Length: 291
Image (cartoon, rainbow, N blue to C red; front, side, top):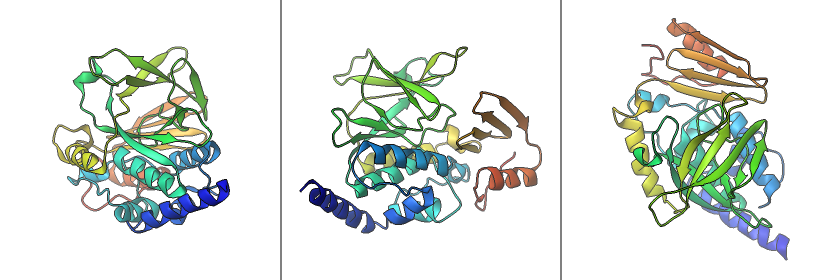
């Protein structure tokens, strides 16, 4: 009976996604996932990691003055069938659609990036992440494949405090912060090694958000002149043995052993070759990588 119910949920989720132009098979093929399709922890972890290691983070649409489309068919054309990546709204919308098509119960959340902030309240809610319920698990899980940083989650973590979680070579934990609101405020922290210690990435509550909310967030982040994503190219790519970042003209490579090398790009043609070869991204028309 459980298998019949699982199949029914998967079928309903897949039909709903296809009606929006979303193709689960094409998405799973793009990220190289050939494992199970059950609503269990192994599937959630496997799909999450495969996505994080396959699809790059990039903001080249905002750089050219365009807020990226979050329509499922457009995301498929850009990130699955095209040689492009995206930023948090695009990545986590793709993942949400996949998990829902597989039968998971998913709640979109919105958080405040705290990197470099004096307090969480000094930043707007401009980051998207997902709360995922997993069969057989007593607590929901935090999933996020769209935080463009070397210390981002590669695997989801359970929504609990008091524990540290190691995933694909990275360490994270969740802590609760004091604040005046009625909902519990959580902060995701990453461990930066013996010299860096723990540092916050973003703070969030478990209040659910809907696609209309993210359309507004996306428009602001993708078009406002004060948004950091409209000012210069910001690209990230993670593989199993290294992390690559292009921030403006500065290219950084971080190896699994912690070795970091940096160089400044000075030639537009060289920059475009690097973006194509190292990040797997086709630069769209109207974008100049180097000022």
